Length: 66
Image (cartoon, rainbow, N blue to C red):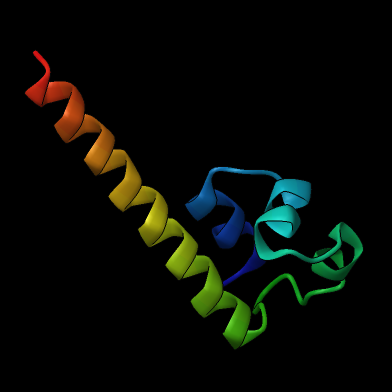
């Protein structure tokens, strides 16, 4: 996964990506643009999956209340 793909997946900017991972923006900026660290890729995919589940839950609750 590239750094830009990670940013796009989470729908954020560089600073927000760093915050989501609990690291500094400078650390993210030092990543190779073409291949981020593999463990960070797993972490980013987990964050994206959690956000999707949360969104689906919110939509289900909203639909149930209508």
